Length: 141
Image 1: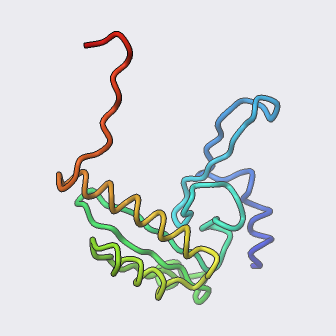
Image 2: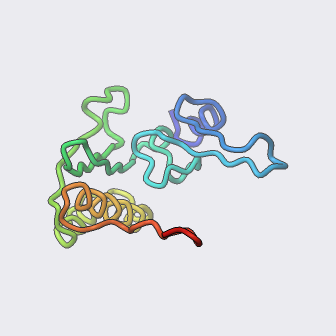
């Protein structure tokens, strides 16, 4: 099935859609929590469901970052159409692996940005660096 047709079918109704705000007048915002969506935005460009070629970067609970790549081959067989690889916790080698593995050039910068944010969060969880401390409110000691 063609990618734009799939997007027309799933853009307003899918289980990954997260709606914030009540009406369009209030400024309703739609997010997406689907795998393969780098920015969690409900748009065709970043959709992991509608695009036959998609890239996803996730961090697991055991502090490892995984790159998942969805290719256009074997679309009807999800196990064969996706491949995943663990990325090293090094910015230079992680960015190089993302650049090599990425099949879509328009998602390279978004994938690198997501990798860097996950890299920072993993380092904070491990205790290697400190996170940003919340500021004190006025009038508190």
